[in-house]
Length: 346
Ligand code: FES
Image (cartoon, rainbow, N blue to C red; front, side, top):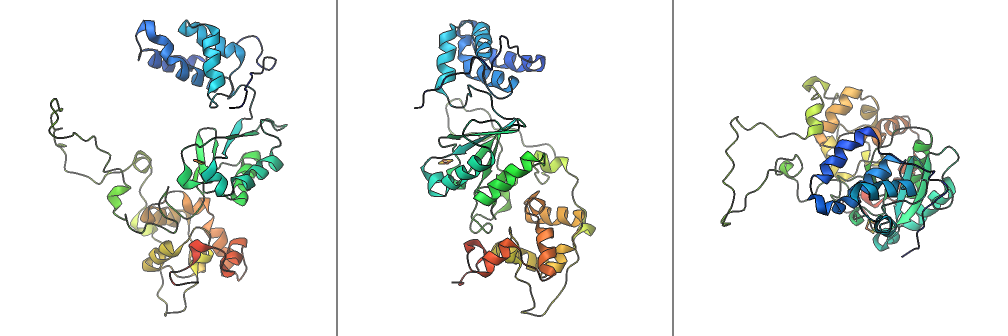
């Protein structure tokens, strides 16, 4: 394990928690008996790091030790052991790049080169204070390797190009979407769902608290819900107005063989193409003409909120409809994109 020292100079002489953090501190302290309150050292260090621009100064560690009535050295031991605690200043957006074996085998070293060229050496903070990066061990998202964590969010299935784009957007103050950057839902297969296709697996309806049967002190069965079961929605879905039926995009009928190869749009694999065709969407020009309401409708229909915009389907479709190429369509045409091949393609 690397030797980690904290930056005494940069930390100044004092630190105090933000007033709005106090209720969260009280929440954590309430979990432990008074004489065991040092058990809250990790959550309090985490909160101190959040209140100190993403890193732990020496005064911040002392403040945590004082609150928990711990010797300073005990708090330093914890802070210097766990790499989730940063001991020197970081950028407003701090990139933690996983370099462990599964990510390394999926080209994490190429992602390192992107960080090196766009940000600089590890733990260097860019002049505008926006970016810094470091390499960390497995972040538990190996199925979506290679990946990085930026502040609190994961960005997964990255390529040097997609990471470069993310960093450029952050540099320019443009919002970036966390999650996967290939044609898949979370960690489902690329190209769309294949075997576990039941909607109930993804709409939250299976997240109810289960009571195991036949336990000695099993809690009583929960009362059935008083209201007739309504379709379950996630909080995000509930907050978003449902697209109206008339927001459905215009569809067409065409003769067999006249379809465009929609898989030349980055983000559309064989499964999504089939779903679009079944909807009556066959041509680039149709997608190019979608309005924001159409996009919402299609995203709702295909259960992937935010993805069409993130992958910029419409701009790609406009170029392809005009007979131009995109970098992605060139790779598809050259047979370099496995996830864009139909079954039976070579
Ligand atoms: S190896 Fe990178 S997330 Fe596990």
